[in-house]
Length: 126
Image (cartoon, rainbow, N blue to C red; front, side, top):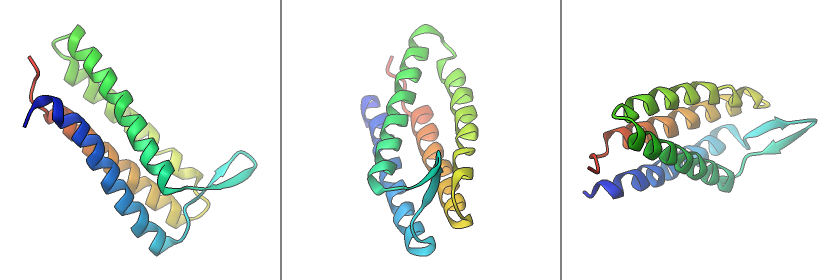
């Protein structure tokens, strides 16, 4: 597989897996609702996909930059990505019930694992 194809495939794979988990979670736990300021917001499938794609593209951009400016780019990026993944786990705490909190935490962990693994295991481009 071409090195240039691995990272977009990691983002796409993370998005597909996140959708699968999202629909399973909704069938088990009901709507995923989070506190948003003084109101509640229901998480949609579109929001899940957009969040994965935006996070993946931002991560890819940072990784590409780090790979250009330092020989330890992947290592530095991996540390940053793991820290952001751990910080992202604070988000699910805004869930209005336990099912939402667990489902969102699983989504975060799944997407993080797929993107981090996919990006760091991609062949070097040169």
